[in-house]
Amino acid sequence: MKKFIAALLSIGLVLITGCQNSSSKPKVITTKRANTKNVSINNNQKNNEYYLNFKKASYGNGNSIANIANYGITTEDSSYIYYGLTSGNTGIYKMDYSGNNKTKIVSDAAYYLNLDNDWIYYRNISDNGKLYKIKKDGTQKTKISDDQVFYVNLSGDFLYYQNEGDGRKTYRIKKDGTGRQKLNDAYSSYLAVVDDWIYYENESDGNTLYKMRKDGSQNTRLNNDKTVYINIQDEWIYYTNDSDNSSLYKIKTDGSGRTKINGDASHFLSLNGDYLYSSAENRNFFYRIKIDGSEKKVLGADNSYKATSMNIINNLIFYEDTTNNTIVDYTMNLDGSNRTKLQ
Image (cartoon, rainbow, N blue to C red; front, side):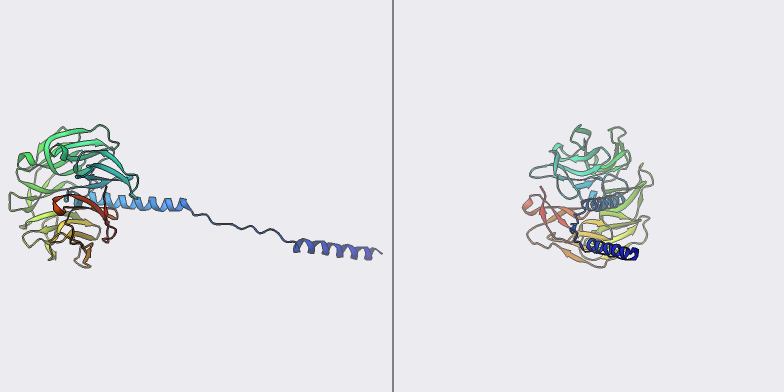
């Protein structure tokens, strides 16, 4: 009898277990949401990479050497791109790295933009080219000097510049307007301040390439070429040689290793990483070429415009179109695509 009861209990347990296992459970369907956090992190990483590359090209200065050689129409900090419009709705503007949230900071037409942590320094075209600064939030606009300035380089506590009012000689002045000092007696163009040296075109000596210390000492000629659009990277100076039909050359910062890179005309030369960007002789297109002279490529050919003043920020080329003697500002991608009017 006990065995019979035990058998019945075993059968019951089996039936109960089977029913539980065969009962259907509702399926839970999960949908993966777009990971906007990762997208934001990736964008921030890319922006940080852009900014670090820019600071390297700037040697810690307020703008890159290449941009200052081309009127310094744009620069950047770790959050925003700053740019100047010199015609139409003139002013200094800022926008975020994606090109959105555009804000006008001041209505002054401006060239040679330089930044530090809090201030924008610039040539104020709206006040006869004098040297100004303004806070990044648009407050405390201040005239630093009555000098008419070109090729402004912010390096450390000083602004270095060509003084148009004194024979276009090289001067420097502290950011607060004190310590104004003349550094040489030469007509000096394309100033490029790198570490402890100032490189420049000496128009008083056949437009040749010179360098001097930041205090004006050790003034030294580096070549015999008519040297314009000075760009510097990794101990090399890249330049347009007007003694050789505006061909593209390079030379070491000590004056050795002079080399012809390419024989085509190279105007508004701008160095970005391993590539040199330039406008052709008739200025209706840009081209880029590697610093070793290889991989030349035409960008954005268009007979309807004349391109000048090329600046590069991150993945964009900023430039001015001077067709019909009217300045219009544009941007385009580094491959020449997506030409867009800048407003």
